[in-house]
Image (tube, rainbow, N blue to C red; front, side):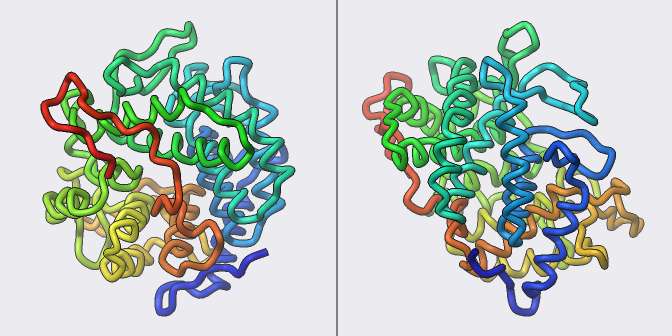
Length: 357
């Protein structure tokens, strides 16, 4: 098992292990990881928590989480949007949530080198991605949800599609690793990358949310000079010096998970100094047991909401791994060696040739 990451002056290895254990403490007997003990489970945050536990050395606990995904996947390849104590609370399916297991599975393969795990989880990833792509529109965007009756939501979200972009790249990496070529996924990824870079009108406006600001960078669709420009444009709107970043630009609260995702985005752009500063800044959310409070209202000095979430803790661990370059999976958000999909040239909807970032 690889070493546990540490970021000198910010987090040491023992603290990272404690954070991993705080996630595992909320894990249910079934392997599911809810937002917090007694909270609900969704596939995206469940996977993020599995990744965090694995990086912290809790591989057995992480594999229990992946086994929960394998045994609860529905025949169409999806998972319910929300489950609590094994009971489905929302039967709809969020396409981003259903795509994200591809990231977790590829992360775990990179981390452990476990070929049996890769083979066992391949059908899960294959069926999930095929389900997600049923909601892709001709231009390339993907509706954010599919209802219980199978109808797409009719609305695409920039942050969700950016995350799916990353998931598709990880799914293709797994497919190539196992020798299961998926040319239709390559086409879908090319179309999605194109619409993310060139067609902001395809997405429901959510500009007040920080996720719409940095997620095209985090998901790998926008990098390089374009990515740096995107981050610079709204830095002052979201970053609160010494505390982290706002979830929304019109309320005085900072949130830990979004701050750590921006850390990962900056690391992907090579902006490591500011990334480290932000990881250090959000440590005021750390509890003595290693868990992390979700957010902080700096206008009145109160925690909000009053919960310590597993996925916030996981985001901290993943950010520490990326910055420290510790485990073999530390570059998954930098998209190290991930497939880029089929480039789209001479797209009829654009006058300019689309060149992958």
